[in-house]
Image (cartoon, rainbow, N blue to C red; front, side, top):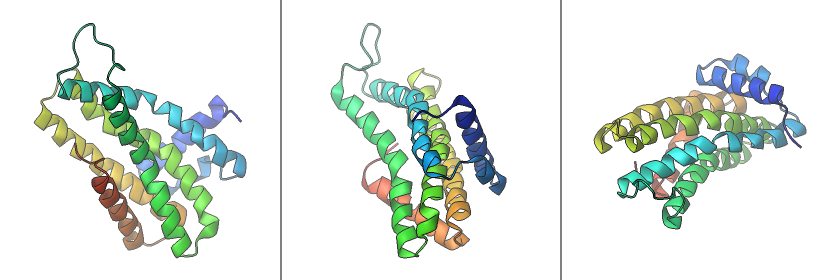
Length: 192
């Protein structure tokens, strides 16, 4: 099942509206079973984020030198993949648990669909500080500051996605995001 370019554009536009805290973005997302499977096409859209995170890791290790291959250190490739996979999956997994706990079974699929499409922006936003560091436009300290600023944007977007799709209160959505951040920190994903 391949998502059409029109569906991808519409879904990303909906995710962009959710980023701006506009619940109308939900109307752009396809909450059917087909839309659920198509939402996983959002993963390849985040490939540029993987490359920039990997380049930043190589720069941090002093391996970003002329003539060296980007993928020649499998430990760094694995770390960058771990970062993006954990970033992508943490909220849906924790949200699924919250939805089951709160008996919101019918809202799990819309939640995961919105998480998938909005995670494209989350991955890209979190890759911007890595890119600035990798190309030498930011020091390690400055890139960390940028990373926290973009993390704040991502956290508010994820909070709104949880609130809008699960139909929970501000506090429950905040608790879900706090659990996501705690899990990410425990897994070493937030070690900027």
